[in-house]
Length: 422
Ligand code: FES
Ligand SMILES: [Fe+2]
Image (tube, rainbow, N blue to C red; front, side, top):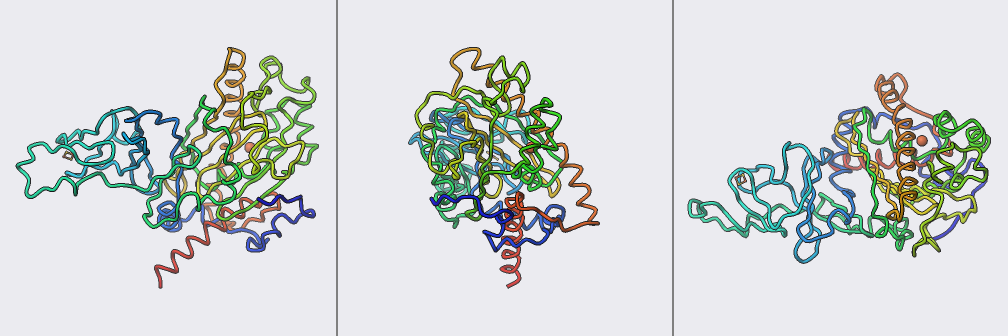
């Protein structure tokens, strides 16, 4: 992959002429008709990450995923042949939801040898085949082979499980493209200690990606989080990221991150000094293979002050790598034009002792505090964009990834509409 140095001031965006520099129309975040087309044109046709293989270590391990954005529930399961498969969570007899526990709309997980329908006890193997029909002789010419679970495309990249509702979609590898290629070899499989958060947010899914895909807001919105000296330092930095890159439909932003450990430990909170941890993660890097050297796609500007790389895999999966040796995922699952479910998971190498464990927990709670601050403005933004009193917004050069996200979404929806009209 090519490495670029920072272009002349104000020109990240102009590096990608297709983005233009005009104010961006945010009707894509408030219009119900746009949202319906977005579901069809984007969510039903893109590779969507539904989690990691860590959730399915053994044969028969499964979990369900409720995907309102594509209007279905899926079962993801590891088969006897170790292949991970995805199926629509619907019984072929009369359409009952096959796998759920106490509440049919809640996600669940577990281990089984086969799936048994709660309604009339039809059974399906881990490979989706229909294996048992109650009182089979009562049916008329029922060929069990024709009534297996309905399959969904499912592929794995570096331990990340992706599904695609579009049978004609190109292979996952090809879809993820060069940005993902540059991450291969990162020791994902060793980072098995997971802290997860989930929240329902009253804003369009793209608005939360917007909030994470620029650091222009950091010294302002997160000012109160830091102690005074630290805040002044951030503000003084005039916050600007180190590097941006677009490989459509995906993109990445690379950023400074001097806080793990901070150059001057006296500027951070006492608990951070004590536990050697904070927002940027535990200060002590785990000693494992794959972090040194990092895969070539990380820190593309090869900057000494590098701290975080954030990759936006279109449409709704973000992958963040932190210099101290851990990573973070975000998912944004739309449930309506003005609502989505936000999921965040922090992945660490398992702690070897209590202090390491506390360092991870401090990073996790600090992260949550920042994320709440980020989420806080979203509902206020959503309600005011929805007034349509102002529709176009002037995004600056540091907001290039936002421009890219909205432009990409709008272009795909427009093509879909043209196809349908034609
Ligand atoms: S609906 Fe599943 S067995 Fe009847
Ligand atoms: Fe933020």
